[in-house]
Amino acid sequence: MFRKKHLLLYLFIALTIVLMACSNDTASEESEGNIEEGEAVEETKPANVEESVDAKRAENKDTVPDGFRVTTVGTGSPPIEGEKTWPSTLVQFQDKYFLVDCGGGCTHGLTKAGIHPREITNILFTHHHVDHNSDFITVLMAGWATNDPRTELNLLGTEGTKEFYNFVIDFYEQDIQYRIDTGYTTGDGMIENVNIQELHGEEELELDGVKISTLDVPHSIKTIAYKFEAGGQTVVLSADTTFNEELIEFSEGADLMVLDGMLAEVKKGDPFYEEFQHIKPQLASAHLTLEEAGQTAAEANVKKVVFHHLMNGEIDEEKTTEVMREAGYTGEVMIGETLKQYDVEE
Image (cartoon, rainbow, N blue to C red; front, top):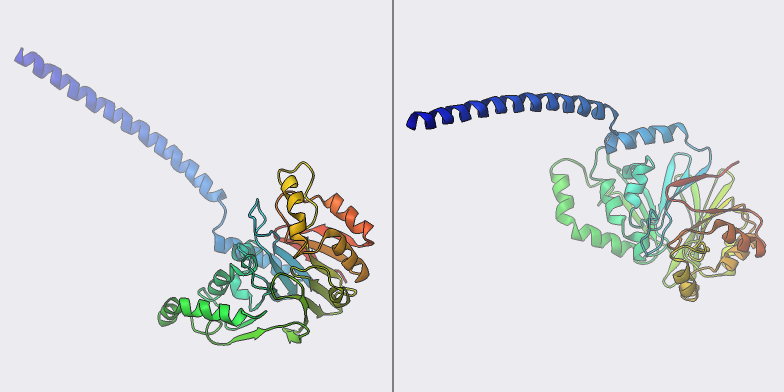
């Protein structure tokens, strides 16, 4: 009996060894197959973020506009929905950039557009609602704590801009100093060579060869619209605003106007349609109605309108254009899209 038990034990061990060997061979074959597949995937996988940004940037450098180009980095409003990130607009004149508002998502939006935050040396605020300034910290730090950082910064906006900047610098004082002490970067463009200017409307100034004018517009808090002029072209950003005659005069003959589109029509049948109809009166207390937008663009004789600051849901471009036409506007009407570029033609 003892020998029989040992014989069975030896047979079990031998069988186990054989099975393990077979298993290892199979695993080895599968592993080799996986390595081959992995190598194939490796060859086709997307480049890392820096490489993608560099490639996109190189593409952009090859297509630097002769005049103005406007990129709607973010076109949404406080309620988050789909791909609409919070308001942010990049105004470009040739190779110079002016970032107007830094709503949530704008930093990564810039990189997707092939623009590294270090290239942004001019940041402007229309007003200090959270959906217009919440990504400021990220833009500020990402353009400085990086390779080849920016070395200067022009920061413009309504009252509170300096306080906002000081808060960020004070709160992150140790973080900033740590990066300087390591020799990774210097204070330039973060705590030195920073020009802050608080605006009230009716200012005229020049940055990077572009004339910038401002207008105080009615909203729920202090808000200003911006006008950019260079090379015989004009771009106007209305900011969040209700109807006012001054904006019409301010925008006279603009080639492109980025206009408050909070009340652009949501398509009937969209899940958000009924809610949109319900909150229209409330929104109209701080934003242009579509009829007022049409009147503004028509009387200002604006060539093209791009709506931004859009509500949730799919915007009904046909209905929006129809209302604009009824209000007398005959120019081009476009519903702003995330990261869409609009070139001002000569």
